[in-house]
Image (tube, rainbow, N blue to C red; front, side, top):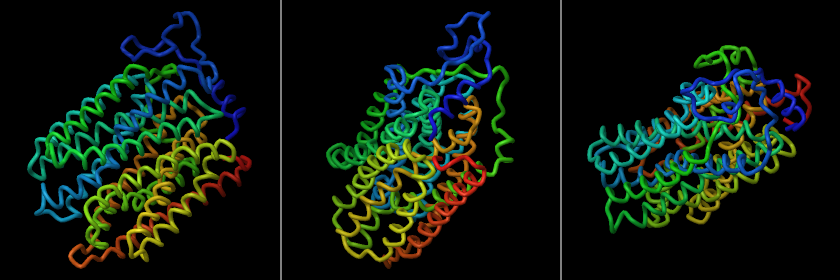
Length: 441
């Protein structure tokens, strides 16, 4: 994306008066009442900017890292804690988690834009840790649903949107790389948490294993709370929960639909790959557990290296070929019949899915002219992704026949929705080309 264009947009942000006394601390608060608060251009580096990336990394680590770990919990719930419930019913716990992570962003975005960054982190940290602690005590489905699904999911929402929105305000020329490093926290978390679960579930049991995960999350979130701060002053006037003008812009509408369809099918392997290993391939439990770690380890590179390319050729130009790769792999998975092929699938698909998760925030920032409402726009756009995630895995789960090891119907459903998302990314690129915005988008 163009550094000069982004700097020009940053300089055109409207002057803002001093924020209210109750807002979280930001650089704008240091200005006197008689001075206009015209924010300087994004620093694109420096200690403060990179500390925001580090803090946002741990927000991702303890939001997406926990959501992406649900595959190992799904297997445990199916086999031990909730054996009387179907895979589709249990998957609702994980999908409500992901749905809330996105949908609550509609409320979180305007709160972020008003400057309440630390308040959001504090609320999110409490809900995630509290939800995990309550999960460790749960024995019934409704208890697990409320604690692991609702409380943890809502907490993750308060952490996720600030983690991507704050980085967008500190970087322009290196925004995709900074966002990719931030997003890699989700993948690294979802490598570490399944490993912790697998190693401790035997000696400690489910309760203390879940509590250990909660304490790990608490440590990282306290670091984020300590180092993160707003750069831009809040706007003079309160923002609405939604920005109605966004729905008059075809690029925003097409991007939202692309994320909706992509996320319907994108996370099917993250929920059901362990079950595929045990039910379809009849593999041992060790390989099934670590398949999620393999998937997410590959996703680490998928969240960072595409960012390097995106800073050169544009985020939208990068996500299109990667989403097509994910589509090819989703269809190819239908024909895989052995462990080696499935592991190769997990590695390459994990890489591609990581890019699809990490690049949209920079695309949203690129098509948003006024950076003071980028939090609101991200919350609106992620709502569509959340709706896709909400319905995708339960539908796929209903298409599974675990007794007869029939996976192809769910795999085909997942592949068809991912290819629809990829097609819409291409449509968005064509729209931007028609608007004469150049090749680097």
